[in-house]
Length: 192
Image (cartoon, helix red, strand yellow):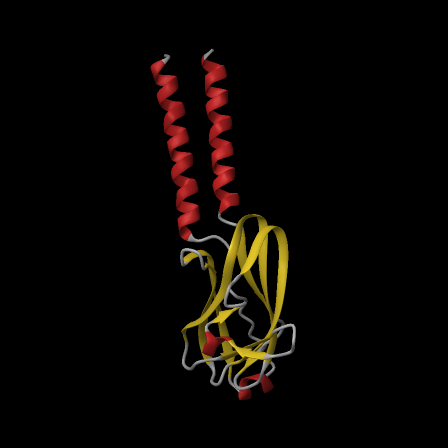
């Protein structure tokens, strides 16, 4: 009976850990581009909104903001009519009444980014629930913009945007593993 209870306890802990890891990735933004980003030269990129069995939200918008950097970048997106929107000026993307997201999908938005001067820039893209003004997901992307002179040098410096798990995700998993290990030790000591 002890072994059965211990086995059930271990299975429940594993399911719990797996659920925590999956829930963190229900909605996620990714930024894709190739090559170096050069100051004052427009760079084509893609912003991907990836949903993995995402919860239904009826009224959402995408919020874009420049977090830090030596200057304000110009981030341009185009709607289905070809109308240009500078996301650093408007701050949001999507209809004023919001749009619906749910399920599993990848939505790609082509953008053109121009950084006026060389340096390191951090931008944040968030999915906002307009019904209660809450943040559904938010990702920060850090890029290094090179000066035009550096491009002529034969050194290629490429910094990929930082995405993935945060330190809190790892600390939560480690804490659960420690609790599981202590529970096993406690059960074994109690029955010895």
